[in-house]
Image (cartoon, rainbow, N blue to C red; front, side, top):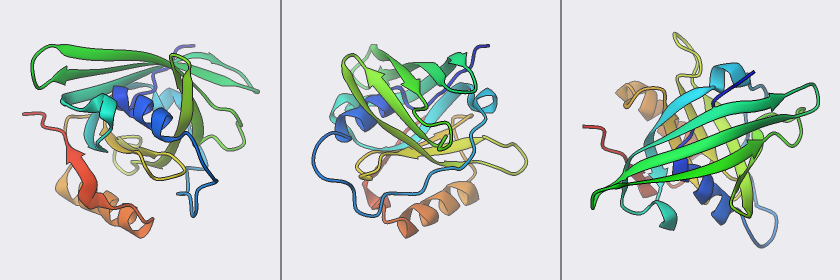
Length: 181
């Protein structure tokens, strides 16, 4: 059974790198209580992110997830993050993601190279097309990505996401928006 997990390719790396160090986070964001990997599977387009060093100069970032194994006790995914560089060319990074505790499915871990970090799914789009968008962060709120199944989101959907993020304590003025034109 194959599945795709996607989030900005560099999203994972950023969450991973910024998730290191220090004390436990104060007021970590809530995560989704259920996660259907079959529906999360596929390509995701980055709508906005908190800028991360490894993602500087990236535009049109995507993340693709594929479930590599899934059982009653574990779930693992492969991750492929890609972006086009503003200066020309492209960049990609491969990773492995897993759900450490299936009773808390919104809290994933991701490993790029030898580094691993938290990859917390805060929101999944519902309504007419479930899993149409996702919001991902880490417990310290130092990384943030808004991803969509399409290269854009309706204004009212994005406005609602931004409002909920501000209520959770995120500074949405720090978001860098991707340009899919």
